Length: 319
Image (cartoon, rainbow, N blue to C red; front, side, top):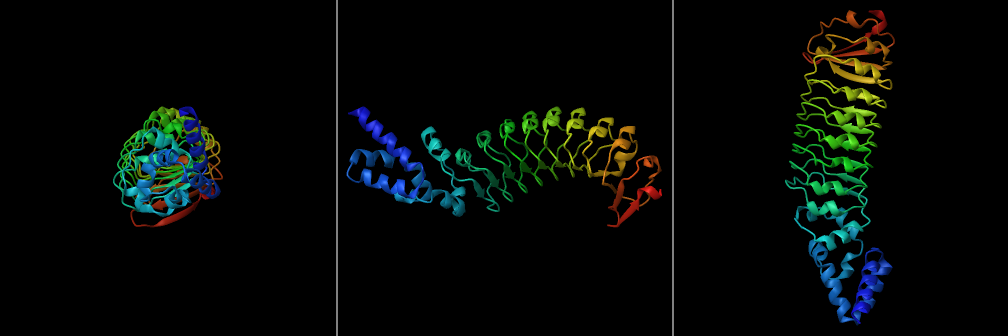
């Protein structure tokens, strides 16, 4: 009898957790005259119903839509048990936007929504993300701009399906070693942080085509940086880089490159191998000597002068 009841409950839970209208309505009929099943359902979905402020399973209809539209839910701290985490993992919610809520603490229960493919959480006040964040392994796009993050989860490399990662205007000091395991990331924006050094694993970003590291505190780049063979757009200006390294010449796909004047004090021969469409040199002075890189032909040079907001185009072949 006990085994039979367990089978009934399991079948009922499977029915409900398809989150389809007809199945939830069928579940309502099944528990209508069965007290044991009614109690089981009340217990299993108690935490979820409390979160959305409802009491009956009818309220689980359109659950994904409720989680998208009711932004106040993300102000609640809920610590689901393993069974409740299993329930959340099945909810067919693929996109979520919790931007602009000024949240100080990332709602950890959100990390159980394993069907998420896109998460926008810009303009909050997060200073860290829980390690459980790395359970969102189906994420393809992650937007965390304009927060207060000082570090990333150590296992962020588990987000292997990630294509877009935006983290500009935070307070990141470094990147974890697992960062280089994000092999499918195409776009990365780390502009306006406090990153002083990149991990050697950075060379593992085999698919990255656009990388913005501007307005950080980088003093040098690791040799593995030269392994970013798909890199097309690179923004390195407003850092503390004093020179270019020879491995930069390995970036054969590079077309657009923004860099500081001080990085051009010594130019390696490998620079001449690049086939750039645009080289933007950010300089505080219009008095910029160009003759020391005159050997690089067919490169469109754009000088941007910060001193007076003035910009000037130079035909490199006229030098």
